[in-house]
Image (cartoon, rainbow, N blue to C red):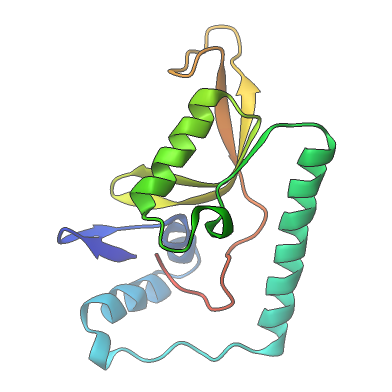
Amino acid sequence: MHKFNGELIFSPSDLVGFTYSEFASWMDRFKLECNPEAPEPDAVDSFMQLLFAKGESHEAAMLNTFAAQGLTIANLSLDLLGKDASFIQKQQATFEAMQAGVDVVYQAALELLPFRGFAVFLIKVPNQQGQTSNLGDYHYEVWDTKLSRSLVYRSG
């Protein structure tokens, strides 16, 4: 959760956090709006580090599986776009990959305000009879492989 032009913007993690705990969601907003008074998050422990490593490993294995299947992949990870790439640049790269019809978009930047975030994978699927898409005879489904790219739970 963060503010952009004075408006609250929510990520997929914010929605998941709210479904698990309205109080945790409230605390995230309290931290955002009253930062000096907010309690610090719990320290990362060895179990969280293990879960993070397993999640990273699983995500990499999925990416390798897609490549081994011969699917075209647009890798939009920060490593390739650069850590200074803005969300708008990442979103534009996502849109261009979708228009090009690649089979898999990795680390896609998506926004429909007030929601904004990243999908681990967008997978190209053909439209069923009667379905329409601005992209032509296909559309994309969001696939996720883990809850977070961070060791520490953070919103936004």
